[in-house]
Length: 363
Image (tube, rainbow, N blue to C red; front, side, top):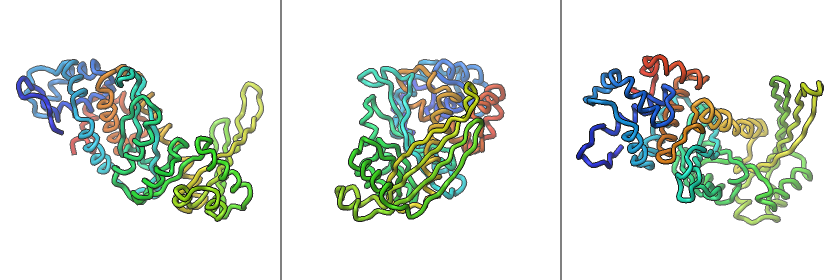
């Protein structure tokens, strides 16, 4: 990690300081003041741990400047290499979910005064972040950022799942060119394609279907995935730039039974969703991939917002750097088999020795 600060007056080396910020986050610190307070409180232990010659703990302002001035791109390059090392086992599904999240406390981070957004590539089976890109306040800028992320991740033989915003033929082409496949939801933002999917799934029999039922407290959901092979009808009614990368259409039929405690009866709901795939997926795999895509909301975004208190972090500048450091921390915890992130951070806050035993932190 290059240090762009002037040598004159540079007291705190960049590498140990960034690592110590990660340790502070592992001990439940959130904003700059909390991080500085943690370092001040644990200075003797940290000096011994890193063999540091610091005479005093870095101030809040020093930690803030380091986060603002650190090269985001260099830190992201290091993070992606690090994330690949955290993949300790080979997964079967190799599913990568793509989605964006707003850092709500980062107001005035952009010129327009909007909170910044982060688009993440989330390896669902391992529950680790493979890479992330910052987005400015405009929602439309998420599309080229996703293509850039797909291109630069350098992975092959994976399946990318995306919401309807990224149902773009250029994005599908980027996925195929990178040696991967994709499943993308289709909605009214692509009206012609959406109508074609509806007609095909209503006019032809599926080549295969799969039914899965999930039970939860007061809730039962049945999902039927139906696969339709690309045919001449699709070729005749849509541009080649679209159909050349579409090998199948997927229809998901969801039936939900939810018990209303107020009415003391079961209430039934039904909906349909349409997807396209860049290869002919089996119905079982399609059912699993589409359901697991939402793991990025439950196992990443929700964890960052609630367990790691990212939404409570009211930082205008340097928020992107802190977000990347949180991704380092989350990958460390997940690579060490931690299930309950919130409880683990609390335990670390009362016992620093627990942190030093994590794999992928010092070794």
